[in-house]
Image 1 (spheres, rainbow, N blue to C red):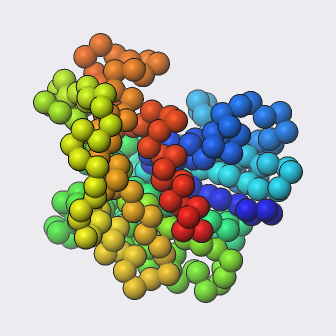
Image 2 (image 1 turned 90 degrees about the vertical axis):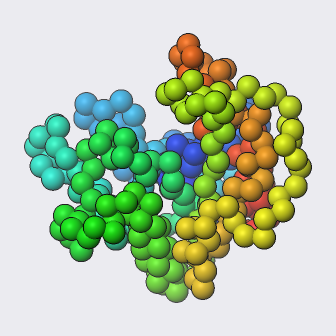
Amino acid sequence: MKHKTIAMVGDSLGRQQFQSLMCMVTGGEERPDVEDVGWEYGLVVPPGGKRPDGWAYRFPATNTTILYYWSASLCAVEPLNASDPNTEYAMHLDRPAQFLSRYLDRFDVLVLNTGHHWNRGKLRANRWIMYVDGKPNTRKNLADMGSAKNLTVHSVVKWLDLQLPHHPRLKAFFRTLSPRHFFNGDWNTGGSCDNTIPLAGGNRVVEERSGDVVAESAVKGTRVKLLDITGLSSLRDEGHISRYSIKATEGVQDCLHWCLPGIPDTWNEILFAQL
């Protein structure tokens, strides 16, 4: 990875993979030599904001940059009224996030992911309005969140595949869905993941196909590789944050995100084996 840039773009599970990689490279220690270069990618705290849309760090000894950009849906999102703090946002299902098209020529490795924000609750909370072909969606078949996600994943992968001949050094991956393990309820109805024994439900992935059918079908026949972590991660329900979050709320468990060190370290080991 000398003189190279590794970019991870996606949701909070993508952020966990980035955090895992940073900790693997640094051994989990503070490193005074590591440079914060987020400003080179526009990753700075916006006016009135709490944090940037991502982070970028450079290791001077090898001139290696590792970055993460927050894009929960991977599609282009833009405010409908930039002057209104409560504006709704156009969510362009058939266009990639602007960050990707702007900085793609600087990446040597790109890992994309999306998945857990494709539900009505997140759509409302983020004030997203679905757009297709540059205008509000009127296609009834896309009113279903699964169909909307399917269109975006296929559109982004198709766009990326068309870009790859112009970026011959770029290796592109789509990481499959990281599984949730809520038992006896969901995240807001008392769901839990109290198991502490690894591989209690078995230690083999026996499925021939990926558990993330959308991602698998999107990359088929393209130059984008599948980073398939769904099956192996599904065996590790004991690896989630569970009740042990620093900011845990009584009666609410996190059975979506992972403890670190933990399962995302294996995702990165598989990524580097593929590289």
